[in-house]
Length: 274
Ligand code: BTN
Image (cartoon, helix red, strand yellow):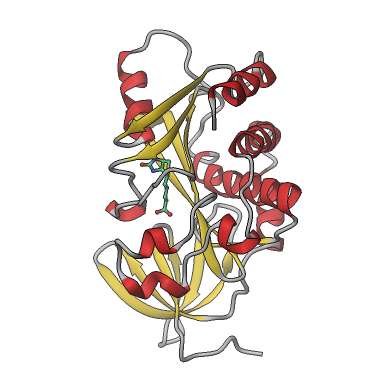
C-alpha cells in the first residue's frame, strides 16, 4: 500500500462511518495497541477510525497467541464506539468475517467459508483471523477494537518458516491461492464498505439476517471436534451456532453444552456424519 493509494482510500472514505480517519503506519507492534492508545488518549470522536500497518512486530491473535504479520498482509484495526450493546457486541466478529469474505469473493472470485468463532478459510485453510477486544465501563460496552489480519501478498511459507510446521497444511494466503498480488488498498476499501453495510444492519438489530448469512457459508456442523475452552480441552460434536453467536455442541454423554469462547479443531480421524 503506497502513499498514493492510501490518499485515494482516505478520499473515498471521507465522510463515511468507517474510514473517515485512517492512520497508516509502516511498522508497529500491533495495530490493536495503537488503536487502544488512541482510545486512552483521545478526546476526539474515534468511532470508525482505522489503523493499518504495513508490518506488525508483535501482532496478536486470539487466546494470547502471536500473529505473524509480515509486509504484504492487510493488518488493520477498527475502533467502534457507537451503537454498542452487550447483545450486539458478539455479532461484530461474524459481520467482520462476512465483510472480509464478501470482499475476497468480489475482488478475486475466491469463495471463503467461516469457522466458528471468527476464522475465514479458503479451501479449508485459514486466510484471515478476526480479533475482538472489548472494553467495558461497568456492565456497558464502551469500545470494541476489531482487528482483521488477512494473509495477502506473501507466501504462507513465510509464516510457517518461523512457526510450528504443523500449520503448513492449515494456513494459506491470497498469493498462494491466486499466484498474483492483489491491491491491499482495493481490499481495504471493499472491506470498509461492507463493514459499514453490515454494521448498519447490526444497529437495526437485524442480527438474524447477519447470522443467517454467516451460517450459509460456515464450515459444516455435525463434526467431531476438540474444543479448547479456557483451561479445558474436550471432545464434542458440533450442532450449530445460535443467533447469539454461541456454539452448541454435544458431549460424549449426550448432553448439550454451549461454548461462548474457545477454539475448535476438527478431529482429523473422524468424519462428518451423514
Ligand atoms: C486470530 O487469532 O485468528 C485473530 C488474528 C487477528 C490479527 C489482527 S492483525 C491486525 C490486528 N492487530 C493485531 O495485533 N491483531 C489483529
